[in-house]
Image (spheres, rainbow, N blue to C red):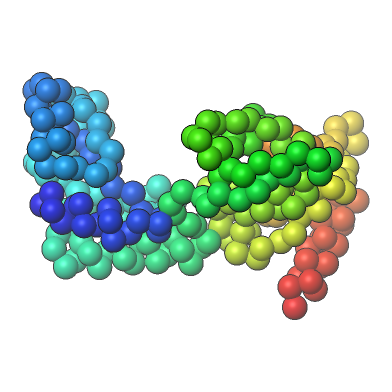
Length: 242
């Protein structure tokens, strides 16, 4: 089975697919030996005999295979052979249709908001208002979201949306106007958020504040003027897409 699993990792490289293993051998040394001997090219966890992962998933026989979709839902269990291959392709295609991508992001030239400083790097992650970029020598460099150029913010927005399970918004490839933040006010008129309207998801209005942090607000908690502005932005975006 190891040969088939290795081929899956290679075949789906760069697509939204990841293979994860859980090992329950009595000794971790046995796991390390198996990884090295069989040249395993995927990430594995050591759970020990009857460990917490095995218990939480109710595993009674080995190997047990779960296929989890991009929403985190278990869709298949213990499919094998051609049925396994077909199921994987189906779920990967569904993820791609929702705008999810896979593999490392390509390197590009990032520019700060002044236009004076540039760096060739690839996007790694977004953490607490900072974009983590990986330089050509492998160093991870945090840069404040608000310090990035508008073009870089717009580029990274699509990647972040896909990573946050908002691929349906990313598919529209909206040129968000992060350089023109607006005020979004609640029904009491006492609280407001300055930022950029991103979209709607499961009854929530999604706004990114000036630091690029995602804020979800129930539509019913926003005042009518704010809701009208959101409707107007939606119309403008649909018009631009036509």
